[in-house]
Structures are given as structure tokens and as C-alpha cells.
Amino acid sequence: MKEGSGDAGETLPAGRGRRSSTAAYYAASAAIGLGSAALGPTLPALTSQTGVSLAQAGLLFTARSLGSLIGSLVAASPIDRGRGHLLLFVSLLAAAGVMALVPAAPTFVILALLLFILGAAHTALSVGLNALLVWTYRDRVGPFMNRLHFFYGVGSLLTPILVAQVLPLPGGAAWAYWTVALLTLPLALSFLGLPAPAGPAVQEGASRERSDRLLAGIIVLFFFLYTGAEVAFGGWIFSWAIGERGIGEAAAAYLTSAFWGSFTLGRLLSIPLMIRFRSATILLASLFGVLVSVGVLWIFGGSSGALWGATFGVGLSMACVFPGTLALAGTRVAMTGRFASAVFVASSAGGMILPWLIGELFGSVGPRVMMPAILIDLVLALVSFGLLLVRSRQTTHETAS
Image (cartoon, rainbow, N blue to C red; front, side):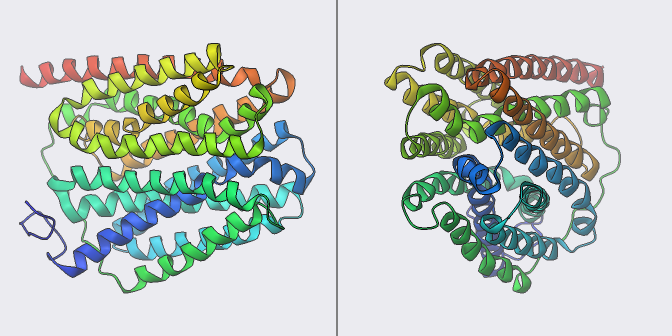
């Protein structure tokens, strides 16, 4: 069925209104990617700007992720009250303001506060986009959800390229932040005139399988572990490549872009793959692919071919894990507002703790600590994913009996 066709499950009428809202959701997802990917490549510039060490700068990831925790907690209420587009407007407006102010932050404390606000805005925006897209397409949301996350990858890919282009200019990395702010502002205003979808009615009589608390806890644990690895790799690969492999800033920015480029390509490829193959099989293969690629970087990263190839492999393998597991979770546990909030809280906590830990160890041990730390985290994530599949089968058998 084509996007423009209607059915009883859709909450916006087929046609221009629904297409306009969907396009705005995709653009907003790209804006999140643009803003989120800026911190890693500009970290050396920000440390110089505020006079702190690279190890201390790891606290910026902590501040942003702490803001994400707050954003994930406060987003549910306005969405459930039918004010989803107002939430998107406020979140985008706040993100644009922060991006404009970051290059002017005079102290590390003010910079950390700005990134705290940015983390809250981006996560509230992400929760809103995912919920509103589901409400718009209901049972047909699958391919639209993959596209939403694909556009996040597009934004994440473009930012390191932008940073590499502006570094030689007077003002350097500041131009990257100002450009993203200027792109985000009109997008925020567009949501004031768009129709918002209505929320689904609460379904009663949910099966025991969809309300299993142990299974829900395992899923939340997985997102905590996995997101830590994704955020840590995307955020620290730039500094690791300079400190551990000795490449220049421009080359490190392009290496970061290679990661996000493969990440974006993987999101695109996952759309037909998720239709053709079992999602659990694809997710297991992806997690093993990440493990192997990070292992290659750790052991053979001194080789230029291994450095670029394995970085590409990490992005390609990571691409479908978050949206794919979120979709899989929706078939195993009731996707209530409380559960969605728990997933994003866990993801934010994971994205806060591991990058902070790596930043601390950067100063005391050195950049070589990054890859083994991420590898250990990924092994634990793979174990939790295995428990997810086992518990899911157990719950299915219990329900059937």
C-alpha cells in the first residue's frame, strides 16, 4: 500500500497533511543527527576554548546524557496530552539556541550546562518523533520508522564533513554549530502549522507475553549497554584516531564521517532486509559484526586499511541495532508510554556512563583504553540480547499453554 493511501488504522487523513508531517519528522530526525554528531569532532576545539584537558572534556558527554535522562522523562506527558507538535517546536527551538551559543561559552561549566539542555531537547524530540510516527501509521509504521532513523544517520554523516570544511576558516568549528542552528530554526517553526496525529486508545486485555516484566527489564538492560557502546564510539573515535593512531584532525574528521556514512548506509540497507529476513537473525549478525570490527580496530588499527575498513564495519553493523531491537521489543512487550520512557532513560544512562568512563581513562591510561572498553560492553550487550530471545521464547510457551 502506498504512503498516500488510507486505512482505518491511520490517524491523519491521507494526502498533503500526513505527507507534510512525515517529511517534517524526517527533517527533525536529521537535525538530531546534525547536532548530536558535532561534539566528537569539535571536542579538541571546545577543550581549547574552555581551557580543560581532554579527559575532563569527557564530562561533556555526561552532561549531555544527563540532560537526555530528563528529556526522556518529561516528554511523555505533553505527547499523551495531544501537544506533541508543541513539544517538537520547543525542543527544536531550544536545540537551535544551544547550538548557536556553544561556540561562545566562556567556561567549562557553562558549556556543560548548554550540552545538558541540548541532550534534554534532542531526547524529548526523539521520543516525540518515534511516538507520533507510530500514531500516524500504526501497524504500517515499520518502513517509516526505518526511514526516520535513516535520516538521523544522514545528519550524523554530514556534521563531520562540515567540521572538516570549516576547521581552516577563521572561527573554525564555531561555523559548524552556527550552520546547524540556522538550519534547525525554520524547521522548529514549521511544526506550528502542521496537524498532529491522535494517540491510540488504550488496549485492554493484553496478553501475559506483552506484559512480562522480566522480559521488559532485559530489554531495558540491553538498550543501556548497547547505547553506551554506540555513543562512546561515535563520540571518541575522532580523539582516539588522533591520540592512538597519530592521524591529523582533518583525517580524523573524515574517519568519523566514514563511521556515520556506513551507519547511514546500514540504516538504508536494513529497510529491505528487515522485510525479507527474521529481525532476530539480522540483529544477532549485526552485534557479531560490531564485535569483530571493534576487535580489528583494537588489534590491527595501526594499519590504514584496517583502520578505515573496521570503522566502516562498526557503522554498518551498528546501523539497525537500535531501531531493529525497538521494533522487536514492540512485538514482545506492550509499548506503553512508561516502557518507552524506560527504554530512553536506559539509553541515556548508557550513553552517559561509558563515554564518561572512557574520558576518565583517556587521561590516566591513554586512548588505547577505548576499544577494549567498548568491546567488553558489547559482549555484555550480546549476552543480554541472548537472554532477551530466550525469555521471549519462554514467555511465548507460557502464554500458549
